[in-house]
Length: 272
Image (cartoon, rainbow, N blue to C red; front, side):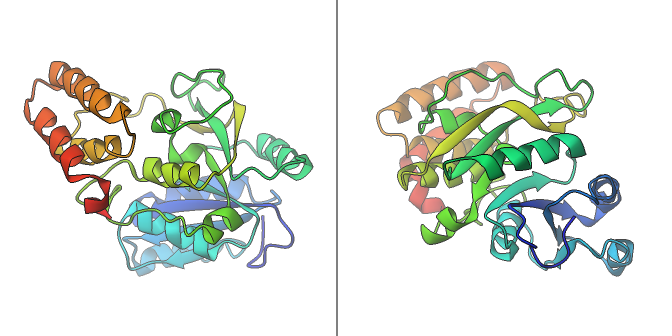
């Protein structure tokens, strides 16, 4: 693991963490202590107790942020990183050191410079299973980024910095519209003609059972999803209709439909 300098490493592991989840993350960091990467942990909602816990991890750069929100955390990590690529991770993932080494070698040996590597997410309970259903397509479009998650994304720092691409701090976990922040980040990458490389192998693992994947979508999440549809041209009305019917049947709440329509009509720029 790195010191505060990147030491010519190619990859930064950038974790977004809150104080109540730090101990769990420290277990992973200890496991990765010999990996040739820079590690940044952006802490939010922390206390002096958490700073004391982090003192023994001097190889890790902790950023003690007074801000709240996942999008702000991601932006702080991008600004703080010193390597060509940065992997945006949550505090509840698992990574196998040997697989991380293989990923680093893949990036170092690449003859191209993708704007984004998209890896797959496996299940911590069974590494042979995937966190969600993946297809084998190799092309990325505005529609296909709708199914991507932030922990799948290894981003070329230079590309996003040069193109002024940021996570929208008004949306995402910890805001009034807790969702879709990574989708809009990726839509900006697509619009900037970024190149994607899809890696059809899991390199990060997440629980597929904790709390279950099925959840009731709040009206605010549906509203920002409607705003997302407004960026997708002719597909927009279809997606609003499809999502509206899907969640109406599942959650039995007409408000999800109204929220989708509200976000779509306002347009995404109203949430920037």
